[in-house]
Length: 155
Image (tube, rainbow, N blue to C red; front, top):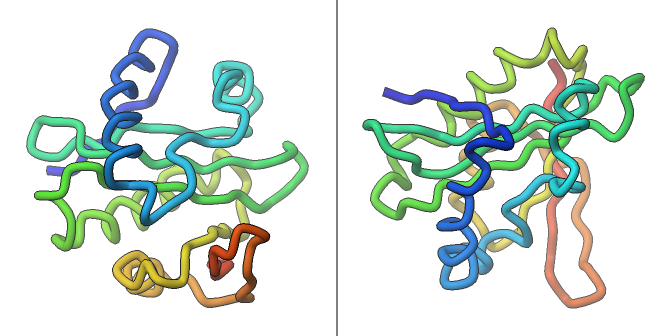
């Protein structure tokens, strides 16, 4: 059973375990495991600029998911997600989590589209995003040589 538990100041300390996993293996897939400005996440949540949750599956935390906006008047949010527990990957959990999280938060955040960036070599994630209705908007290379695909989903 997939559940979302909102991240707050009382449970943010659970995130510490992801930092170690990120350094060891997640950073080959993604460049960050936190929303932008996560040090100030409480005011962002209060202003409706951030929805950030732990992913619970089978009674344990397996990762996190978030939608973040740059300004309250914008109707676009950026999606971030990761599944840190290797045993829970390739089971369709990410696809379910993304679809459900967007649907549950689109009205409250007043969204008409969701965007994301993904490394082009992360084929598993790209397939997941495509199943959720995201399409490639553009491809580019960062200054450090990382090849990235920007994807978008209209709601």
